[in-house]
Image 1 (spheres, rainbow, N blue to C red):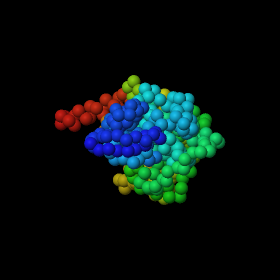
Image 2 (cartoon, helix red, strand yellow):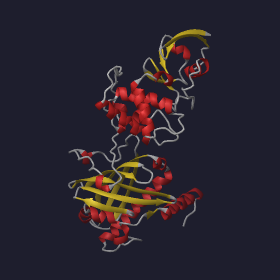
Image 3 (cartoon, rainbow, N blue to C red):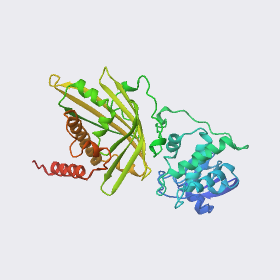
Image 4 (cartoon, one colour):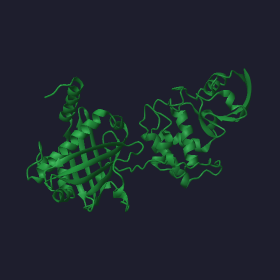
Length: 397
């Protein structure tokens, strides 16, 4: 047993405690501060987050004896805190809580974010919240609540707010870029303007939180003819099942793509910008969009590079697809089945380009219907599954 003295919610306490007792158990069992919730008890979920000397810590993996002579603040200790008052009200307004189990830790983390990053954007908020897990809300309401408080503080600052903690700059934890696009195409902003070096970025460079897929297909037409076709956005859109081009000016575009994956439907609307390097026959399409149904959001880059083959009689199109999903659909983004499915889609895209260049309709869809029909992935999914079964058992056609 050890005797420790510490301050809990501005109240000095002295207690005997065994060395193996964690701070979370000490707060709940000894001092009945049950607002500190214990979830995973491995320091992963963040439900047990409290402040120790102003720093957020996981109380489930912090020994109580390690907090001797320190100041601990639990969710019960914020009753007179104006910032916490605003956060609680905002969480309620923006539906940032459902079952409430993660909420105490989430609020304490939110308070820390607001104090350290008064100009935080959505990407920074999501990055800082990544250590607090919620099984109910999907995080949309939580992020909206924090953004609302940050905006409110600019107009109505808190006079006696404590000085923000110093932020240690670390390039390895830079927030990933994420552009939010409204679901309604009319209000979707343009994608960020390209920089001079944008097209020269190496294809396939993995970014944190992104999934990358590389593949290629061959088109039986000369390189210059294929390159010219790939710059014709309406023609390219007709080769994408379920895609509909709503507006374009040669480099930027607005559109939507509808996909049906069994019982799951998605209808992404957004904007993109095409960056072309005519000398290298290489281009990047950068875009972002939002699904009306699930409120999932996506960022994506499609890089394609053309090279001549068969003495100039045909062209190989090397494709790198990089994407990041946020929201309910993110759980489907990284499985091997999805990657195989995307590769089949790329092959189908190549077949449609070949058909268009040959002067015929795209396979299984006329030019008129391909733009508006929802792409039913069922057939492709079953072909991928059957291919995997044959690989597993060594079956050959």
